[in-house]
Length: 269
Image 1 (cartoon, rainbow, N blue to C red):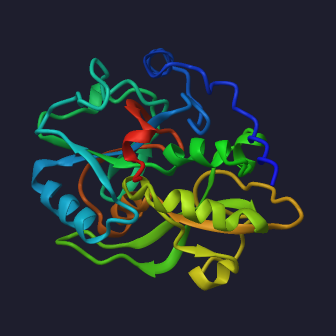
Image 2 (cartoon, one colour; image 1 turned 180 degrees about the vertical axis):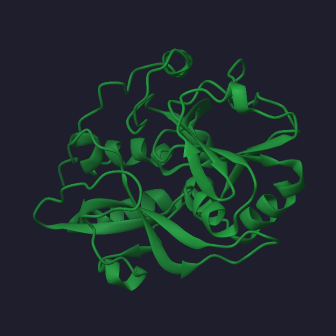
Image 3 (cartoon, rainbow, N blue to C red; image 1 turned 180 degrees about the horizontal axis):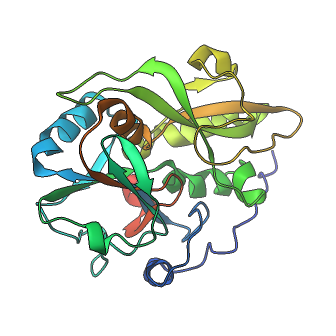
C-alpha cells in the first residue's frame, strides 16, 4: 500500500516554542493548533492554594480529561516544561474567573496574579496532532484556520471535594477509513488525553448540534468524515462554572501554553 499523504502543515508549524511565547508575550492572540510542530502544548488552570487539593483530586479521579503534566508551588510562575517562560504572560489568551464566571479574557494576567495561586498544566490534544498529520489524518480545523470544536457533554465527571461538572470533549472530523489509525495513534499518548472517548453519533454524548460548539469554532466536515471525540482539558473550566470557586485563572479554550517538551516524550512505544 502506498503511504498516505501528510496533512498540510500550519503556517506556524516550524516556529520554535520560545519564539511563539515571545510573540504571545507581546500581545499576539490566536489559537495554537498547528503551532510549533513536535512540541507539547498544555492547558492551564491556576487556583488559590485552598482549592488546589480539590483540583488535584478532580484530576486524579478524571485522568482522561485532566492528565496532569506539572503542578507549581503556590505563587510560582515558572515550569520545567519551558525554562524561562512565565505562566502569567506567555499564553496567547487567558480567562479570569470570579465566582464561577468569566469576567475578563486578557492576554496578560500579571496584574491579577496572586501569591497563593497553584498552577496546574494539563495535557492537551494539540500535542498528538503532529502524529495524526504525519500519518495522513487530516486536521480540518487547521486546514480551515479555525479553533478546534469543543462541546459540553451529558456525561458527568467524578466529583472531588467542591469540584464537579460535565466532561468536555474536542471533536475532529476524520475520514471514516482513518478513524482506526487516529484511535491507534492517540491511544499511545495517554498523557495528552489518549484514545477517543466516542466516534460517531454526537447524540450519544448528549451533543445536539455539532454546528454550535460550546467552545472554539464550528469546523466543516468533508464527505465521508466521521466525528471523533476526545476528552478535553477544558473540562476543569466546566467544573469552575459548575462549582463557583471565588477566583481562578485559566487559558482561553484553544489558546494553549506551548512548552519546550517534545511530543514524542508523551508517546508510548
